[in-house]
Length: 68
Image: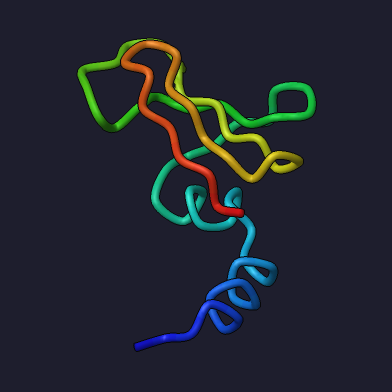
């Protein structure tokens, strides 16, 4: 089993913008990034990725996650 310290060290080195951006086309929008949400049939960008909070959140279907 992986110890908590190793997991926390990995989280500190990762950036959610890099991770999400490797799968989706992100566009800068102020301090955040936006894109079309892959979790539903989205026609306008509703998925917001916040580098400062290390989270993403879809305002259409309310799915989100936090990296740190």
